[in-house]
Image 1: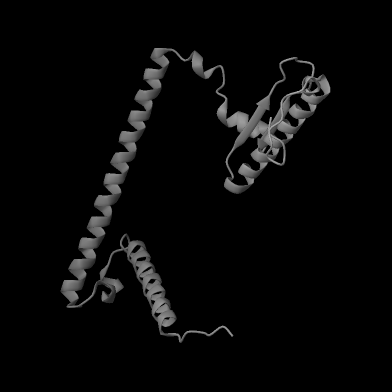
Image 2: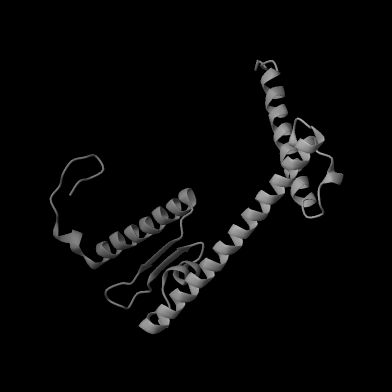
Length: 178
């Protein structure tokens, strides 16, 4: 057994007393909780420690971040979930596939609608002889195209402002720290 000075001493009969064993266990338990707390503070994981003593007489060691109950609620699977039959699982998967197909169809419809809006803006641009899409007269667009046109203009404005801010930041002289 190593001592604090690095020298090795032999185990003695007094090292195995009940009091010394309890002190070592208490130290290790406190160290375990301290390390778990440090890990949870540094990396913010969901962390749970459950340590039950072999004797069953002492209280168990319980630690959880953010709380033990929240970690166990997220990790431990309810007993009812495992009781699902194959037919029920197949029906649930089929329902999820139907929903995914419905969502895919809605996405395709929205993409087609946006393409139609873009084509109408492009046609209005060519008709009016404008060089850029944002110069198009809004009276030439329909009511359905106006919200998309306004959203595109807002996005363009935000992009221009962001780029101007970057250019202004690059042109500033460096500040000296004295």
